[in-house]
Length: 409
Image 1 (tube, rainbow, N blue to C red):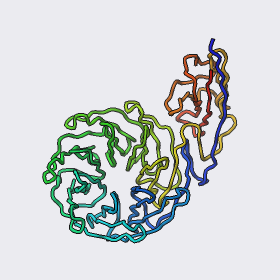
Image 2: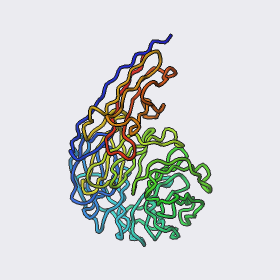
Image 3: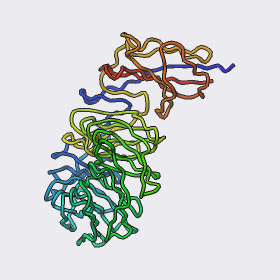
Image 4: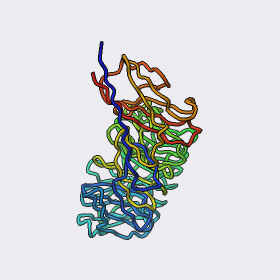
């Protein structure tokens, strides 16, 4: 008979922002910026923040717990998106077009050249064999393709202006995916940059596509109303639905790291979604404080968030078992014992047990099984770390509780 020992502990972190509510995510630092932070790009020890009417802000993140504003450059319009490569930064500046900026000295950024395009530039991506092209999402003016082979004289070389509301864009080889509002995601061939051509599209049912990224043959879409959508681009002409998670009112951007997607979910804050199985994505953490999240980037173990009027905020996803925000009531803390491969779960709330739910998660945050009050057969579990998460039903406003469970032979 296998001898199994369950030990339990509950780890809670005290929030650095008293009004914040979070699960498995903690804030480690931040810096207020003069404008409204719309986007962020990370390179080395610096974060490059698209700070709206305040232009470009360059922040040292050598110590992510103490970000420091080290340089800035005013732009002739509202800065929405940035991408940085080496010593050059490319900025999408509303109706003022694409601006090419030297960041060789982050304390003294300087404009090298610019080009005005039709429409309002929101999203931006870089591609080409030598990274000589910028792909810009220009609202109702569609996709604009700009050569930056000569940074002092960028030139628009092609466009596809049939899109409805181009807001976000990502490059994927000979294609770009454009988040196109209520028309979903358009997949456009840029094998000939002078004639970008639509080859397929993915429609977000009852939602809008605002941000997009790609990885491993799948596209990940930040949507309005429909949370995160995942679709396959194995055949660019016929993208197909893979999975979906969440129903946040608006989501503007998405970044990937490891098996997680990080969603910039406007007033719902930062949401962390496991995409280890793209067909069954599920939320494993979040951080929500006053304000709204517009953009997100991940570098190493840190998540950098363009948090609107809160500026640049830095977070860590800590995995299941970490919660900030309101302290848990003792009556919500689950109690479990194991006898001969049976996990006995005590009451998970001071009210009726049917008003609450509990589930067992593995170390990656994936749900292993639903738990019921009383006996649960866990004899088939492999030794390792698990988490008992209990929480209220959808109609309750009580917080959830998470307990770490170590299983050894």
